[in-house]
Image (cartoon, rainbow, N blue to C red; front, side, top):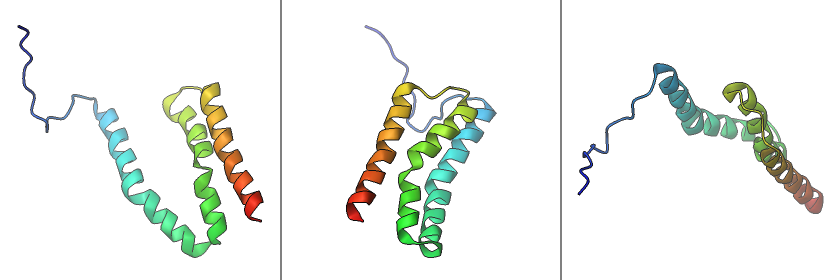
Length: 96
């Protein structure tokens, strides 16, 4: 019988301060800043432009990942981002 120590669910994992700053910044952006800026953009620019800019976020994510994590984007990630943007372009051509 193997004894596994019980760890309370609310116990945070041990991480360096720099890691917690990155996690907190990400939570702040995803939870508050991104929705606030998206709603602001909808009222400041044309709705179609705001939606298009939001739809090409895979490209932004791909570009920002490189300097933030020092990992080059993979061919698979670039292909996925290209397909996502291509889908937005295809749908915008169909609706025109």
